[in-house]
Image (cartoon, rainbow, N blue to C red; front, side):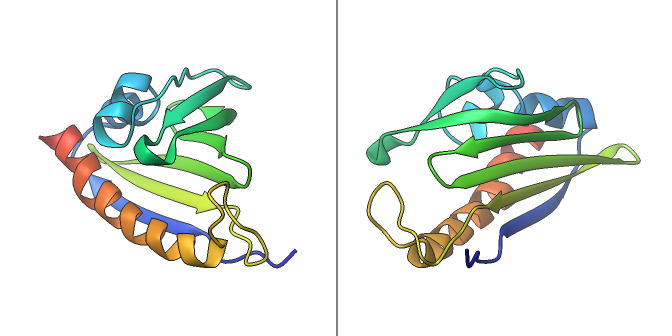
Amino acid sequence: MNMQTEIRKTIILNAPIEKVWKAVATSEGIAAWWMPNTFEAELGREFILHAGPFGDSPCKVTELDPPNRLGFDWGKDWHLVFELREIDSKTEFTLIHSGWDPDKVTEFGQPHTIVQGIMDQGWDKIVNEALPSYIEG
C-alpha cells in the first residue's frame, strides 16, 4: 500500500488542557468548532459525523487517553487523532489526519490525492481559526 503523508496541524491554545479536552472530546465541543455529531468518549463507541452536503460519516473511537489523546476511525479509510500536551497554563493541540492512499477514492468517488489537498486547507482554517475562536473566544 502506497500511503500518502498524513495531515498534521499544531497550535498553542491559551487555555488549560481540561478546557481544550472538553472542546475536542465531547459531542457539544466538537459540534461547536467542527461539525455536528453523535460522539461519546468511550473506547469502541461508534458515532456519526454529520458532514452537511457530504452526508453522515460513520466513525469509531479507537484511542482514548484523557486528557491527552483521542483517536477515531472516520469513514472507510481515514483515522483522526487529537493530541493535547500541557505547556505551562496553555495547551498544545495537534491534529493528525491519516489514512491517505493515492490508489483509493473516497466514499464520494474522489481520489485521495485530490481530497487530501482540500482537507489540508480545510484543517488549516478549522484548527487555526474555528478551534481557538471557540476555546479562547
